[in-house]
Length: 95
Image 1: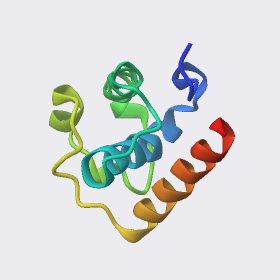
Image 2: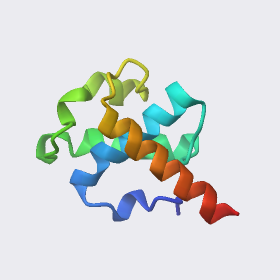
Image 3: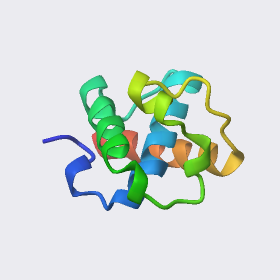
Image 4: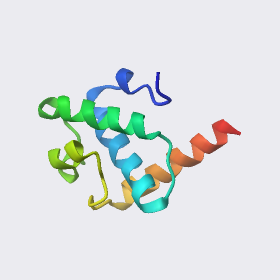
């Protein structure tokens, strides 16, 4: 079982969680998901890619998912702010 419950997420929730996780890890040196959870999220998103609908899906490539990286993604402020809120909530829950 993972902390996010990746297997329980609706397929369209995979995009924002992938983007937020990638932003936190690659640009903020923070993480909510461990490496195995992040990889599982990327794999599930890739597996369901054709049926996923999300306003930010265009920011992710299937190559990103295959490589398991979000380093080159161009994050907008909406994603950045949501990621920071998610991280802060995560830290508060752990304390």
